[in-house]
Length: 130
Image (cartoon, rainbow, N blue to C red; front, side, top):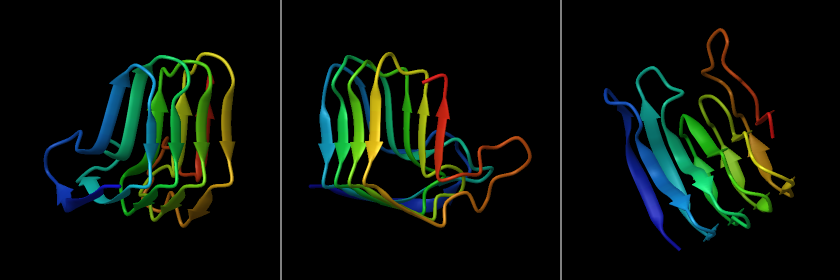
């Protein structure tokens, strides 16, 4: 149970509220807000990459970030459930290049994608090669 408040729009890219890579984990019951970069699409409230199987992201409240929850190169058994993701500038939940079955269920997604430009995902849930 953590609260992470960003500083709003920054001029340096890759601001991350909570970041995880490597093994298996559960990221749950956190509040993350205000993680933004001035050209958007480079920062995330929760960013998970290059993991082993069985990562769970659940029960988080993620508000006013460039990307709400973004997962890249995760192992099989990825579960994203029971999160509230609101006012993400680009994508609410993004999952790219996971290995095996992923489950995305029972999330509340509100007003995501409002700042996306040409070629951006501009959506609440974005899946690519997953």
